[in-house]
Each structure stands twice: as structure tokens, then as C-alpha cells.
Image: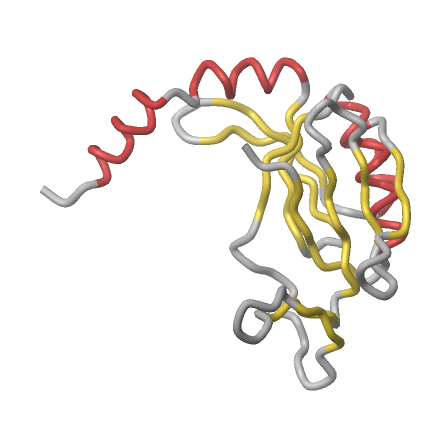
Amino acid sequence: MIFHASIPANDPKHVAQVLAELWDGFAAPFSPFPDAWMAVAGDDRGSIIEVYPSDQVITPGGGHEESVSYGADTMKRPQYSAFHMAIATKLSTDEVIAIGEREGWRAVRCTRGDNFFHVIEFWIENSTMLEFLTPEMQAEYLAFATPENFKALAAAAMPQ
């Protein structure tokens, strides 16, 4: 189970506010890191998405020290990456897509696999993909996402 995750953004406050809207939660500053914000779901798991300025990185601490965050003056983050998350929302497909359209961000309903389940690809700042699942999509996903199905997919992917 994932309790929280972090994503980069050019405008962390605004992105956290949009994510909070999709979750019917709230946004607030995330004090451990300068200019970071968090979207809080307000659920019983304490789910949050931390949103960091895109020029900030997290690095390992030395020895047994915790990780540290700092501005990466010499690094520019690529526009796209392999990262994504699937996230539940109480909103309908039309409501999620309307929020994406309002923001000028790509938001499109998609089918995953061989019609396994559906998601809404929601591209934060047209850079970071989050898959939002409406209540109906969550039911499809949960029906598909069983250990047996994942084992079958893994077996089918193995070289013969």
C-alpha cells in the first residue's frame, strides 16, 4: 500500500491545489522542504502527494542520516519520465477531464491492456502522468488486479 508519493512541478502550490480538488481534499504547504506543497486526500490512510519544485532533488544522506533536499542548479529535469501512479477519485470521468481541460493539461480516458481496465491519463503540467480512476474504474481495476492475474501476465511475458 502506498501512503504518500512525491512529484516534481513547476508550480507546486497550484499542482497541489488541483490534486486536492481531484481528491476532494485540501492543499497545504509542506514545511520540510522550501516551496513544497502537499495535496491531502483526507482519507483513513493519510494519503498525500508531496509536490516539490521541479529544480529540487532528494539525495541520500551520509551514513545513517536521512535524505536531504536541495536545489539542483546544474540539473534540468526531463519533461517526461517512466514514473506514474494510479489514484482513486470520487469524481466522474467528465469531471476529471473538465479539470484537465480547465488547466490546459492533457486528460484522456484510456483502456489498459487487453481491455483489462480503464483510467484517465491526467498529465500534470503536461509532464507527469497520473492515472485517475473513477469509482467504476476502481471496480474494474480491483477485479483485474489479483495475484493470479499478475502471475499469469508474468508467465506470459517470460521468454520461452
